[in-house]
Image (cartoon, rainbow, N blue to C red):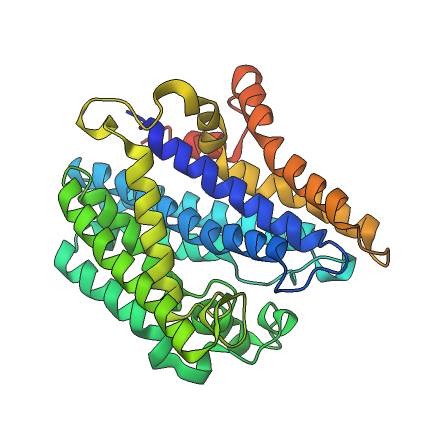
Length: 358
């Protein structure tokens, strides 16, 4: 049985990803990192990927747990893992080609990204199913500390185009594992967070205690920012929270926001009631059920936009803002239309079809 609040969270996650990617391709003229509009865009972007990865981890873990309960054999596990890994890697390659740097885009064809991270997660998810909550919690804490352990190896001095490129296999492995856009260290932190949120589904008190600790830690990062007179959050650079590379405070703060959002949207659905706001947010659910397809498809649109705008002057604030909002919101009615007309035609449908013989 699908949970409405999970589909709504998936929708919010992928739509936030669309928003931040669109804002990156059509940045308004004259907007610096200190501008309020830049801060709002960065805030959505900063939470988009953690939410997307966490809810993806939640979903994969739920699917794997169900199969573990059914006593899957090694062959059955292979039929579950291989299509997921293959599809996610193919989707990552497609995204890279659609928004390639040679056509004004942001990626090299070989750039490891968030879908590569999810492919690795799918490959090892059956191990998580057999791992205790205590051990996964310890692993999550270790991943949280990994930015400190990595130090300069996390690539603080890499520019964006250095971060998405690799001169050889050794560089590519480094981008995949510790200094790319979404490297395993530390981004697997959010996948494991998703598995734990799943396991504590019927124990809201435990989740709420974790949220309280996270809010305290978040408050501490703000105090540190004020005392040290440094920016609280930047995409990269000298700040308490940084996205590239993901700093330890960023992991803690974003995990707290993700946990709060999931708890709020859940409402009382888990205990037999309704998700937050009942059916009034159900319009988001089709987009949530189509999140992978939307993620890949929106890069086709952005790739075309990047090609057309290459060498052209930037838009002013209002047109750029309008383009970003329209391109983000349009996927909601498109997903609903898709569900009514061709629900079988999607990447999600392709994955279901590949496993229909199980």
